[in-house]
Length: 331
Ligand code: NAD
Ligand code: UDP
Ligand code: UDP
Image (cartoon, rainbow, N blue to C red; front, side, top):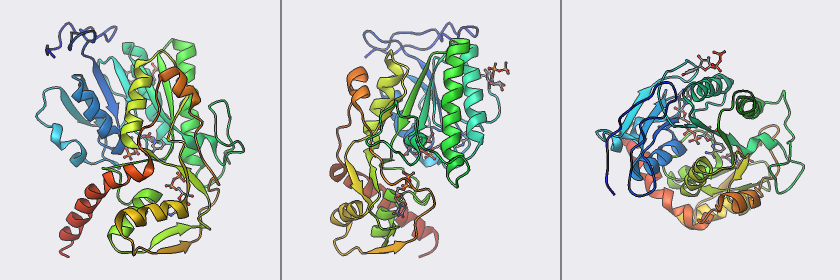
């Protein structure tokens, strides 16, 4: 693979003087908002790995510099500390929009990135979520299902924020001709996942490592489908590079109850791990499982890593971070 430098930047059309990277592909300049986060940092690794130029925009709300520090010094990598709620001017070919705190600022950030895509003619990919289906009345969920979200519920801020982001994305496509892609991501896990943001996989894994009981909310019979992060990243890139707008479900159809998940964590990390029941949160979806036939057919994508293979791949990363944390506390 021969590498060339970027030239001929054209600020009007944003076609950043694309120069060859190997055979049949041109190097692109790509923005990843939320690129210092869990999914974003893995995506950035893949894009840098294949020879593209990557600009990460992140305000470190939940992301961490540690997730991308191995790329510092790479001339094709740039990190901008910036809140996407504020406008920003850049010249790029593609925008992967992952930045999203679970709050309404989601909408403003998406609007700005769509405005940027419109101005420079970049292709825009929204990372939406399976939460747009709410507590689904269809199982498994197909992309044609419109969802069952309580608009005034405790978790609706996130769900409705993403639903609005999807609406804005399609409006910019229809109204302004912006090239867009929409991914509906189902529960994803892997190394670099936030340690303490309350997701079930990170909670169980951290609890098992710390020799604390795994907290099962409700009766533990609710289901989720867990996808390993490298499968998701492959799906996001296939979607961005393909010809279809979506929305596409990106998830692993393997479905588990929370009690089954606890079993897998126990088998993987500590056979003596115990569970402890806690009250569940309001409006918790009873079940969730993606129908991925559309992505299989049109993107030629499907996940490869089942839960029992993926979970062990995150344990070392979690152990190291928990160890560092404990040392930090002088423990
Ligand atoms: P994450 O919290 O690890 O990453 C989000 C990143 O965005 C963080 O680095 C954070 O600092 C950054 N960010 C937040 N607000 C920002 C702002 N205003 N300006 C700039 N940066 C900001 O979360 P993740 O799990 O990597 O999720 C990435 C995307 O995928 C999100 O849009 C999320 O909604 C979506 N998603 C994730 C899952 C999952 O299971 N991980 C499931 C469905 C959808
Ligand atoms: N925007 C941005 N970067 C750009 C172009 C636009 O951040 O390169 C922001 C802009 O500030 C606005 C939003 O994106 O808040 C939507 O832009 P658009 O041009 O669609 O809307 P308008 O400014 O016409 O209302
Ligand atoms: N959950 C649990 N114990 C925990 C954290 C979550 O049993 O420590 C349950 C939660 O009630 C939900 C499921 O696990 O039914 C998935 O929760 P998560 O927040 O990971 O994802 P989401 O609800 O957004 O799909």
